[in-house]
Structures are given as C-alpha cells and as structure tokens.
Image 1 (spheres, rainbow, N blue to C red):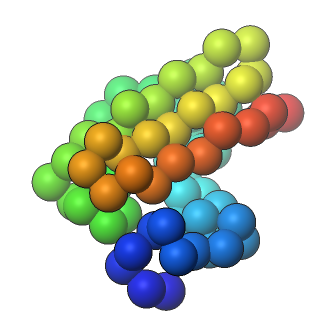
Image 2: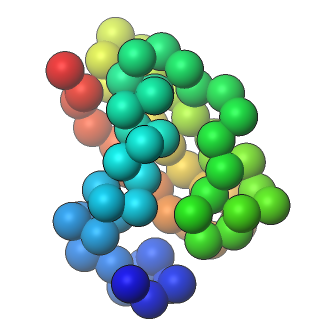
Length: 67
C-alpha cells in the first residue's frame, strides 16, 4: 500500500483501519493512531452504529454503518 491514503482504494482503507473500525463499532473510540501518521490520534465517532474515522494530518477517512 502506498502511504498516500488519497490514492488508496476502499479495500485498502478498510484493511488499514480494520482493527480501528472493529473497536469503534464496539464503542471504543478513544486512543487510536493513524496507520500513516503513527504519532497522530484518529478522530473517531460512533453514533448509533454509524462510524466516522478521520486523520486530521493525512486525511485518511472512513464513514459507514457498522453492524
């Protein structure tokens, strides 16, 4: 995988964020690090199963229904 997430496919994004998405889907949204920018904390939310994950530095992001 290239380290520029703007060039990643949806599958590559899902693979990179698999553990984060699993945790966020279970309600654990704190303390996750970006797979590209390891020193940067991800901004994660879970609202009624709708999960949002975003890195403010590299702009890696995911938004979708986990369930």
